[in-house]
Length: 369
Image (cartoon, rainbow, N blue to C red):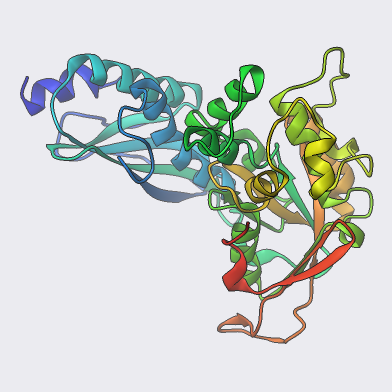
């Protein structure tokens, strides 16, 4: 099958809100009056972002999902997607499964698949997405202000635990294995939540590189510092998130449904030597769990800041979106001062963990364990 037959069979889909899709040298898009276009691009490379032999349907889903997550972090509604793909061979069974995964997610989020490029080469996926926000309402990284709460959606760490399982760093079984690998291979972009956060969140980012690393990006852009856990999240100690991680991986029989994690308070177990002992259903080393939760990527949850006055609105939002929203910290004024051009002179993140106070420089956000 030549390139054009491949495009026609696997990569051509009807469009719903695009003037012209696949078939010409470029697509035609009519912007919605009063809206700004939001564009994002991510690349997935075999051997770097996914293992050789990865399931093609899941890979098609993830290739689009990680891009839609970027739109979600901007509060944008998806509109169009383009796929650039290098293929070692035109394997029709592989292409059919990959296209089904990509197109299935695109249909769920009303995203028109409007073109791209195909070539022969090592497996490489490059997706570009376009979205829209009403002018002036996009969520940025630069809006966090001292006194704002810090929130995160979902349960951080599941994707990283799935990767740790595949690397042989832990051995998950049953429901634990399924939950972690589902998060790793088919993440759920929080598009509805991102759109709903317009006018509520002061800053937002998606968690692709780890909670503390991505929070660091917000702090630098906003010229701010932050405190996470302990006194910085009055009702919720950061380490209490260990309890929802365990529950998501292997919920005890008969446990109450506590999907909206805002109520999971000081009863959580600290991420220290007690953690593994307190959870026989989850045979994971405490240091690995800590690393996955704080520094693991691949969750594609939303991390955002919001004024204290928005707490009731956020609780309502959690219920309406069906997404756990947990308050984990507070934005602070930077101790070292700031300048308009470069943000804080020394961005500082203070982590309260198991009654210890840990100051983290920006260079330390990605290195735990």
